Length: 306
Image 1 (cartoon, rainbow, N blue to C red):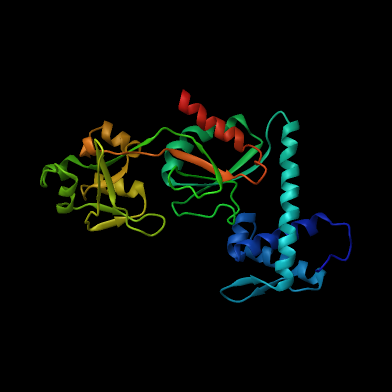
Image 2: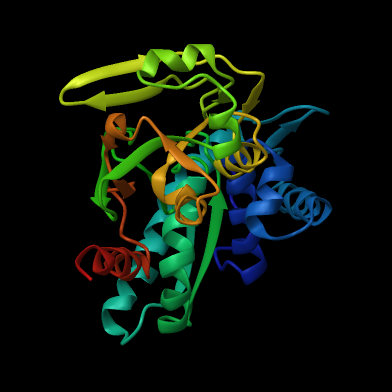
């Protein structure tokens, strides 16, 4: 096991060890630099300085890959334990503070970001000025632990096992919507299967699969593989294309609420609109809850009762 030439660690030593640990976890200097908020060249320089001081190569680098050496893997394993203890100790200090202080890194679905964070995050930031928040809006299923996030927000039926999950919204109503112009110039839609004769705006989900639209009425559930000229991976763009009379899109009713209220869009098959699980915030239970996360959860849950 390599060791620093002195038992007293300087601030630079700790910073460089943390930099190495982030690179080892993400297996990428570019991604690690983004997470650490520094340039890639500065990060590479820090890790090389650390290797020079230790006298041991910690990472194997090629033009495409980064992987730990045996010594690097062994060091990373022990550093993970040590830095986890340090993070837990710092988080525990918040019990002695009047207000939380620290940084939260959150991975959030785009629907959750637009519907929840735009509503509740400004008030949270004002109430807790000593908490900084980084929000990564991403519809892909991300391993929040390996990616270095403190928590994530997903639909209740998509959260991985072994996480603590807390409901932070009401149940969600999903609808198919289209512009009046499109609906008036195309065949009438009476049943979900009628959509197969229409131009639907397909949705590619975060896992790469094209979504099959769900409909439900009085226990009768239909799952329709819709055809379409256009496929999108973002709700907002799908709604914009529906507003442009390019077809029918499928989304959370609240995402299209403003356009529905103005009559710019209409719900297709309103009696078949399914009610699905709510948004949940989830985080690893085996870790100390980071400062500010409990308060953020409470701010969301207050919205459920207000």
